[in-house]
Length: 148
Image 1 (tube, one colour):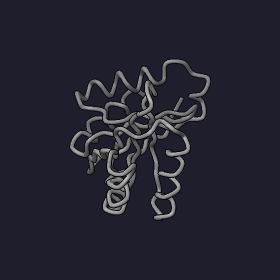
Image 2 (cartoon, one colour; image 1 turned 45 degrees about the horizontal axis):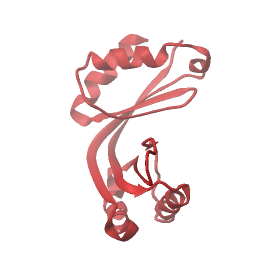
Image 3 (tube, helix red, strand yellow; image 1 turned 30 degrees about the vertical axis):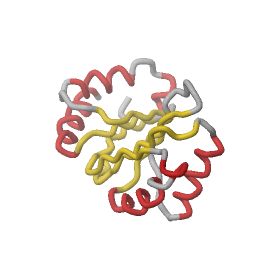
Image 4 (cartoon, helix red, strand yellow; image 1 turned 180 degrees about the horizontal axis):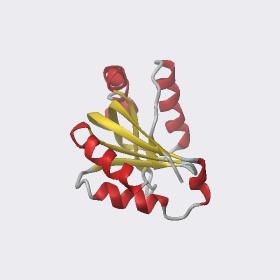
């Protein structure tokens, strides 16, 4: 397996805490963000255990001001946006991942050698993406590259 490993810079992580655990509400959030012309990349929804939950997603740093002007008013102000900008997304892509057990373990084990905080992880059958701070991105990238 020879995956493509890429790095995207200037990524902001936004976590909306205490949103209604309702897919209709979540759809409205992303509809509005799309109307603003903002591209959303990584998305992660916390497991729902009550009527409220947390939703995290990433956008380019340049889109932060527009997003915050919208998200700060959600649900009459009861939603609490938490923002972390200046991050990097490291993606590992390979169609062969779908039928290859242990790829995530290899990525995570090698990322751990960089001794960094992973802010967000998203996956699909052929991609694993890690969000890390800009200051740690070179170390994480090098460690993951060593794995393959």
